[in-house]
Amino acid sequence: MTKSAVFLYEKNIALSLAGWSVFICAAAFYCILFNQLVLLSPESYLNSLLWSLKHYAGWLVLTPLLLIVLAKSKQRRLQRSVWSVSCSAAALLLALSIRVIFELQSGAESRWVSALVNELPEQALVLTVVLLFWALQQQLSSGRTKSAIQAATPIQLPETSPVPSAEETVLVSKGQNECLIRWRAVDFISTAGNYVELFCDNETYLLRATMKQVEQRLPTADFVRIHRCHIVNISVIKRIETLPAGNGSVSLHGGQVLPISKGYKQLLRLHKFVAA
Image 1 (cartoon, rainbow, N blue to C red):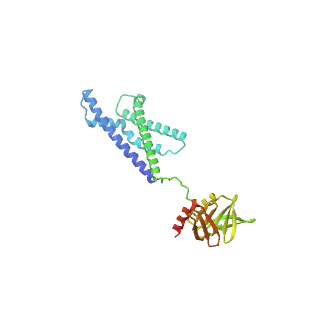
Image 2 (cartoon, one colour):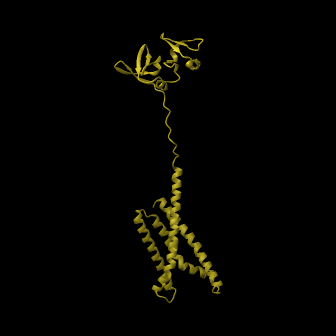
Protein backbone atom coordinates (compact mmCIF):
# COMPACT_ATOMS: atom_id res chain seq x y z
CA MET A 1 0.00 0.00 0.00
CA THR A 2 1.43 3.36 -1.01
CA LYS A 3 1.87 6.30 1.36
CA SER A 4 -0.90 8.23 -0.39
CA ALA A 5 -3.31 5.30 0.02
CA VAL A 6 -2.43 4.96 3.72
CA PHE A 7 -2.92 8.70 4.20
CA LEU A 8 -6.29 8.55 2.42
CA TYR A 9 -7.40 5.60 4.57
CA GLU A 10 -6.35 7.27 7.83
CA LYS A 11 -7.90 10.57 6.82
CA ASN A 12 -11.28 9.02 6.01
CA ILE A 13 -11.31 7.02 9.25
CA ALA A 14 -10.47 10.11 11.30
CA LEU A 15 -13.09 12.27 9.59
CA SER A 16 -15.75 9.56 9.89
CA LEU A 17 -15.08 8.89 13.56
CA ALA A 18 -15.02 12.58 14.40
CA GLY A 19 -18.16 13.38 12.44
CA TRP A 20 -20.21 10.44 13.66
CA SER A 21 -19.04 10.89 17.27
CA VAL A 22 -20.31 14.45 17.26
CA PHE A 23 -23.58 13.39 15.56
CA ILE A 24 -24.22 10.46 17.93
CA CYS A 25 -23.62 12.63 20.99
CA ALA A 26 -25.90 15.33 19.56
CA ALA A 27 -28.60 12.74 18.80
CA ALA A 28 -28.36 11.39 22.36
CA PHE A 29 -28.69 14.89 23.77
CA TYR A 30 -31.71 15.51 21.53
CA CYS A 31 -33.28 12.25 22.78
CA ILE A 32 -32.95 13.43 26.39
CA LEU A 33 -34.54 16.80 25.59
CA PHE A 34 -37.38 15.11 23.68
CA ASN A 35 -38.15 12.73 26.54
CA GLN A 36 -38.07 15.44 29.19
CA LEU A 37 -39.87 18.21 27.30
CA VAL A 38 -42.33 16.26 25.14
CA LEU A 39 -42.87 12.87 26.78
CA LEU A 40 -42.23 14.27 30.28
CA SER A 41 -40.26 11.17 31.25
CA PRO A 42 -36.68 11.33 32.58
CA GLU A 43 -34.08 9.51 30.54
CA SER A 44 -30.43 9.01 31.39
CA TYR A 45 -27.77 10.17 28.97
CA LEU A 46 -26.31 6.64 28.88
CA ASN A 47 -29.59 5.13 27.66
CA SER A 48 -29.95 7.89 25.09
CA LEU A 49 -26.37 7.30 23.93
CA LEU A 50 -27.03 3.57 23.57
CA TRP A 51 -30.17 4.33 21.57
CA SER A 52 -28.19 6.60 19.27
CA LEU A 53 -25.46 4.00 18.85
CA LYS A 54 -28.04 1.35 17.87
CA HIS A 55 -29.26 3.59 15.08
CA TYR A 56 -25.98 4.88 13.66
CA ALA A 57 -23.09 2.67 14.89
CA GLY A 58 -23.03 0.77 11.60
CA TRP A 59 -22.15 3.93 9.74
CA LEU A 60 -19.02 4.36 11.87
CA VAL A 61 -17.55 1.47 9.87
CA LEU A 62 -19.42 1.84 6.61
CA THR A 63 -18.66 5.53 6.05
CA PRO A 64 -14.81 5.34 5.81
CA LEU A 65 -15.03 2.15 3.74
CA LEU A 66 -17.49 3.73 1.33
CA LEU A 67 -15.39 6.91 1.00
CA ILE A 68 -12.22 4.93 0.30
CA VAL A 69 -13.90 2.69 -2.29
CA LEU A 70 -15.47 5.68 -4.07
CA ALA A 71 -12.17 7.63 -4.08
CA LYS A 72 -10.24 4.69 -5.60
CA SER A 73 -12.58 4.36 -8.56
CA LYS A 74 -10.53 5.23 -11.68
CA GLN A 75 -12.78 3.91 -14.43
CA ARG A 76 -14.35 6.00 -17.14
CA ARG A 77 -17.16 8.37 -16.25
CA LEU A 78 -20.04 5.98 -17.06
CA GLN A 79 -18.36 3.00 -15.37
CA ARG A 80 -17.48 5.18 -12.39
CA SER A 81 -21.12 6.23 -12.03
CA VAL A 82 -22.31 2.61 -12.11
CA TRP A 83 -19.62 1.66 -9.61
CA SER A 84 -20.61 4.52 -7.25
CA VAL A 85 -24.29 3.56 -7.38
CA SER A 86 -23.45 -0.09 -6.73
CA CYS A 87 -21.21 0.72 -3.75
CA SER A 88 -23.81 3.11 -2.31
CA ALA A 89 -26.56 0.51 -2.68
CA ALA A 90 -24.37 -2.10 -0.98
CA ALA A 91 -23.65 0.28 1.93
CA LEU A 92 -27.35 1.03 2.33
CA LEU A 93 -28.20 -2.67 2.33
CA LEU A 94 -25.59 -3.38 5.00
CA ALA A 95 -26.78 -0.49 7.17
CA LEU A 96 -30.38 -1.71 6.88
CA SER A 97 -29.32 -5.25 7.74
CA ILE A 98 -27.53 -4.04 10.89
CA ARG A 99 -30.57 -2.02 11.96
CA VAL A 100 -33.01 -4.88 11.34
CA ILE A 101 -30.82 -7.28 13.36
CA PHE A 102 -30.76 -4.78 16.26
CA GLU A 103 -34.53 -4.38 16.09
CA LEU A 104 -35.22 -8.12 16.04
CA GLN A 105 -32.78 -8.79 18.91
CA SER A 106 -34.21 -5.98 21.03
CA GLY A 107 -37.39 -8.01 21.51
CA ALA A 108 -39.64 -5.67 19.58
CA GLU A 109 -42.77 -7.39 18.33
CA SER A 110 -42.21 -6.75 14.64
CA ARG A 111 -41.28 -8.81 11.64
CA TRP A 112 -38.15 -8.13 9.67
CA VAL A 113 -40.16 -6.76 6.71
CA SER A 114 -41.84 -4.08 8.82
CA ALA A 115 -38.50 -3.27 10.48
CA LEU A 116 -36.91 -2.94 7.06
CA VAL A 117 -39.64 -0.60 5.79
CA ASN A 118 -39.50 1.43 8.99
CA GLU A 119 -35.70 1.94 8.84
CA LEU A 120 -35.34 2.51 5.08
CA PRO A 121 -36.10 6.29 4.95
CA GLU A 122 -33.75 7.13 7.84
CA GLN A 123 -30.86 5.04 6.49
CA ALA A 124 -31.37 6.41 2.98
CA LEU A 125 -31.17 9.93 4.41
CA VAL A 126 -27.92 9.07 6.20
CA LEU A 127 -26.47 7.65 2.98
CA THR A 128 -27.42 10.86 1.13
CA VAL A 129 -25.57 12.95 3.72
CA VAL A 130 -22.48 10.71 3.42
CA LEU A 131 -22.49 11.00 -0.38
CA LEU A 132 -22.84 14.79 -0.17
CA PHE A 133 -19.87 14.88 2.19
CA TRP A 134 -17.87 12.75 -0.25
CA ALA A 135 -18.75 15.07 -3.16
CA LEU A 136 -17.69 18.10 -1.12
CA GLN A 137 -14.44 16.38 -0.18
CA GLN A 138 -13.70 15.61 -3.84
CA GLN A 139 -14.40 19.22 -4.83
CA LEU A 140 -12.06 20.60 -2.17
CA SER A 141 -9.34 18.07 -3.05
CA SER A 142 -9.59 18.97 -6.74
CA GLY A 143 -9.30 22.67 -5.92
CA ARG A 144 -6.20 22.12 -3.78
CA THR A 145 -4.60 20.00 -6.51
CA LYS A 146 -5.13 22.70 -9.11
CA SER A 147 -3.73 25.34 -6.76
CA ALA A 148 -0.65 23.20 -6.10
CA ILE A 149 -0.08 22.66 -9.81
CA GLN A 150 -0.41 26.37 -10.52
CA ALA A 151 1.96 27.21 -7.68
CA ALA A 152 4.53 24.68 -8.91
CA THR A 153 4.31 25.82 -12.50
CA PRO A 154 6.92 28.49 -13.27
CA ILE A 155 5.60 31.78 -14.57
CA GLN A 156 5.94 31.94 -18.31
CA LEU A 157 7.33 35.30 -19.31
CA PRO A 158 6.28 36.64 -22.70
CA GLU A 159 8.76 35.83 -25.37
CA THR A 160 10.70 38.77 -26.67
CA SER A 161 12.50 38.91 -29.95
CA PRO A 162 16.27 38.97 -29.47
CA VAL A 163 18.01 42.14 -30.52
CA PRO A 164 19.67 41.37 -33.83
CA SER A 165 23.42 41.78 -33.80
CA ALA A 166 25.19 43.74 -36.48
CA GLU A 167 26.13 41.73 -39.55
CA GLU A 168 29.77 40.74 -39.75
CA THR A 169 29.78 40.08 -43.51
CA VAL A 170 27.83 40.96 -46.62
CA LEU A 171 27.31 39.06 -49.88
CA VAL A 172 28.30 41.23 -52.84
CA SER A 173 28.77 40.86 -56.60
CA LYS A 174 32.07 41.09 -58.47
CA GLY A 175 31.49 40.68 -62.20
CA GLN A 176 29.72 37.35 -62.68
CA ASN A 177 30.73 36.09 -59.27
CA GLU A 178 29.57 36.63 -55.71
CA CYS A 179 31.70 36.79 -52.61
CA LEU A 180 31.56 37.61 -48.92
CA ILE A 181 33.41 40.58 -47.53
CA ARG A 182 33.60 41.94 -44.03
CA TRP A 183 31.83 45.23 -43.40
CA ARG A 184 34.80 46.58 -41.43
CA ALA A 185 37.06 45.98 -44.46
CA VAL A 186 34.97 48.39 -46.56
CA ASP A 187 36.57 51.86 -46.95
CA PHE A 188 33.50 53.69 -48.21
CA ILE A 189 30.17 53.16 -49.96
CA SER A 190 28.66 55.21 -52.78
CA THR A 191 25.40 55.13 -54.71
CA ALA A 192 25.31 53.71 -58.25
CA GLY A 193 21.75 53.83 -59.59
CA ASN A 194 19.79 50.84 -58.25
CA TYR A 195 22.97 49.54 -56.63
CA VAL A 196 25.57 50.72 -54.18
CA GLU A 197 29.31 50.39 -54.70
CA LEU A 198 31.45 49.08 -51.88
CA PHE A 199 35.13 50.07 -52.11
CA CYS A 200 37.47 47.67 -50.34
CA ASP A 201 41.27 47.41 -50.77
CA ASN A 202 41.17 49.10 -54.17
CA GLU A 203 38.44 46.72 -55.30
CA THR A 204 34.86 47.71 -56.11
CA TYR A 205 31.88 45.48 -55.34
CA LEU A 206 28.18 45.88 -56.13
CA LEU A 207 25.23 45.34 -53.82
CA ARG A 208 21.61 45.72 -54.96
CA ALA A 209 20.21 47.93 -52.19
CA THR A 210 19.49 51.53 -51.31
CA MET A 211 21.77 53.65 -49.15
CA LYS A 212 19.15 53.62 -46.40
CA GLN A 213 19.02 49.82 -46.42
CA VAL A 214 22.80 49.58 -46.30
CA GLU A 215 22.97 52.14 -43.50
CA GLN A 216 20.63 49.98 -41.39
CA ARG A 217 22.88 46.93 -41.83
CA LEU A 218 26.19 48.63 -41.08
CA PRO A 219 27.99 48.57 -37.72
CA THR A 220 26.95 52.06 -36.61
CA ALA A 221 30.08 52.61 -34.50
CA ASP A 222 32.38 52.16 -37.52
CA PHE A 223 30.63 54.05 -40.32
CA VAL A 224 29.22 57.53 -40.77
CA ARG A 225 27.21 59.04 -43.56
CA ILE A 226 28.78 62.23 -44.87
CA HIS A 227 26.63 62.80 -47.97
CA ARG A 228 23.41 61.47 -49.45
CA CYS A 229 25.60 59.50 -51.84
CA HIS A 230 28.48 58.47 -49.55
CA ILE A 231 29.07 56.51 -46.37
CA VAL A 232 32.63 56.28 -45.08
CA ASN A 233 34.52 54.03 -42.67
CA ILE A 234 35.77 56.26 -39.83
CA SER A 235 39.05 54.35 -39.56
CA VAL A 236 40.17 55.33 -43.11
CA ILE A 237 39.56 59.08 -42.70
CA LYS A 238 42.86 60.97 -43.01
CA ARG A 239 41.77 64.59 -43.02
CA ILE A 240 38.59 66.62 -42.90
CA GLU A 241 38.35 69.99 -44.68
CA THR A 242 35.48 72.35 -44.13
CA LEU A 243 34.45 75.43 -46.10
CA PRO A 244 32.82 78.65 -44.84
CA ALA A 245 29.57 77.62 -46.57
CA GLY A 246 29.32 74.61 -44.23
CA ASN A 247 30.20 71.86 -46.67
CA GLY A 248 33.65 70.36 -47.22
CA SER A 249 35.48 67.17 -48.08
CA VAL A 250 37.04 64.09 -46.50
CA SER A 251 40.41 62.76 -47.56
CA LEU A 252 40.96 59.01 -47.08
CA HIS A 253 44.18 57.08 -46.53
CA GLY A 254 43.74 55.49 -49.96
CA GLY A 255 43.87 58.89 -51.64
CA GLN A 256 40.15 59.24 -52.37
CA VAL A 257 38.41 62.54 -51.60
CA LEU A 258 34.70 62.51 -50.82
CA PRO A 259 32.39 65.51 -50.45
CA ILE A 260 30.72 66.44 -47.16
CA SER A 261 27.24 67.93 -47.30
CA LYS A 262 26.22 70.54 -44.77
CA GLY A 263 23.42 68.36 -43.36
CA TYR A 264 25.80 65.53 -42.32
CA LYS A 265 28.65 67.70 -41.05
CA GLN A 266 27.55 67.69 -37.41
CA LEU A 267 27.13 63.91 -37.46
CA LEU A 268 30.66 63.51 -38.75
CA ARG A 269 32.02 65.70 -35.97
CA LEU A 270 30.23 63.58 -33.40
CA HIS A 271 31.76 60.39 -34.72
CA LYS A 272 35.16 62.03 -34.94
CA PHE A 273 34.87 63.03 -31.29
CA VAL A 274 33.79 59.54 -30.23
CA ALA A 275 36.64 57.97 -32.19
CA ALA A 276 39.12 60.25 -30.48
